[in-house]
Image (cartoon, rainbow, N blue to C red; front, top):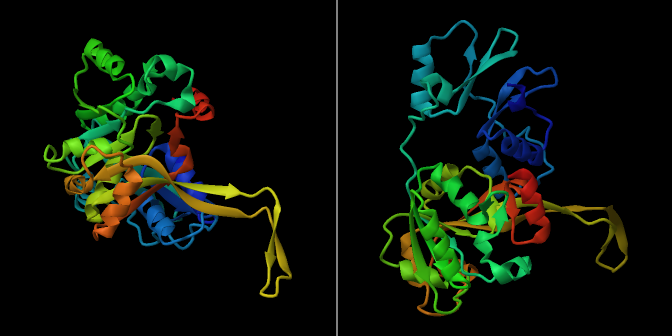
Length: 349
């Protein structure tokens, strides 16, 4: 239970990492004596980051001080279920008269057998961009297509697919070019219990060009992911964010802090030294390579032309379409297309 506790003087970065570690969507905020103060959801954190809050800022001004709680001995199971169903909470803290947390109720346990009654499975299409050469992973990719590079006993692409299957996604489209016949043969041999369709590029079309082949085939928002990334985030939350924000494109971005290991010199208007910043840190939102798109944006992609996802995002914005950013913790993103990150993935997957 205490894994869900976070003190109010902790930073936004601390909270992101803790949510990622515990695998929940909400934390319980406490003071130094572990007395209940409120709750902090992943949505609260996203809003603060998108408003420009620094990752080093504390959560004191962003957590929900008016969150719902129940008093020990003064509730019934019927009341609990009614609250959960009405507000769709992930958890409800139970506190005593001293505001000490004695229990935390979770949706799944209240309704039994882990069954989530808040909605049906996600069931949206997933496009995996699997046609690249994977030059950063040579010499392995001289022999195998990048999606089939193994991580333990499974190739990268199966790790990616499994994360979507857990949400109820069973329709996958794979864009193929480099060593595409090997990738197709793998799935023919695998005989998976999900649907796989291949989009064949006759020549490389960039990170978005081949998506044009799907124009007219999809009737609802869909995920697009690179074939060399693992995103340990709640994909259902990404979908909800996309829908509730009425976005045409949503990109998932990693909240990263980069520290310059030197003192930086700041100058005044006269070109003289104003002050020195000792090892300053800067916050950035880094594009991870996971997106959610509405089918309408596919019409913007030119036919049989080298075209990248950055081109699509720019063209969508130029057309007045709405582009959203869904921040995640930097530990929730693994770019397996680099050797250092590939080795890291071996230790965490």
